[in-house]
Length: 177
Image (cartoon, rainbow, N blue to C red):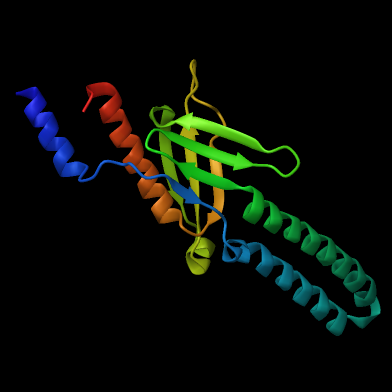
C-alpha cells in the first residue's frame, strides 16, 4: 500500500529519471554588469574633466588609471570565469571546478545539498542573469559559507535541474525507488 502511494507520487512529480550529465559555464554576456561599471566610470571621469577643468584634470587622470586597472581586472575575471570555471551536475553529484594555476575540483553528493536559493536583483533582471546560492552540509554540520554562483546566464535551468536532481536523488537514496 505505502509502496504504491510512493510510486504514484514519484510518477506524478518525477516524470523522468535523471540520467544525463549537465554542464554550465560562464558565457561572455554573463559579465555585462562588470563591464557596464567600467564604462560608467570612464564616462563619469570624462564628465568631471569636461565640467570642472581646474581640478578635473587630476581627477580624470586618476580615474582613467583606476578604470584601466579595473579593465585589466575584468579581463582576468573574464578569462578565469570563461575558461577555468565549470559547474557539472550528474545524477548523484554536483561538481564545481575552478582555478588557473591550481585547478580545484569540489564534489558534493546531491543528498548533502540542504538549500538552494535563486536571487535576482533588479539589475540582474535587466541584464538577464541571476545568482544561485547552494548550501551544503558536512558530516557534522551545515557549511557556513554557501557556494555562490554570481551572474550566471542560465540561472533558471541550473536552479530547476539541481533541485529536481536533488529531490529525485533523495527519494532513490531513502526509499530505494
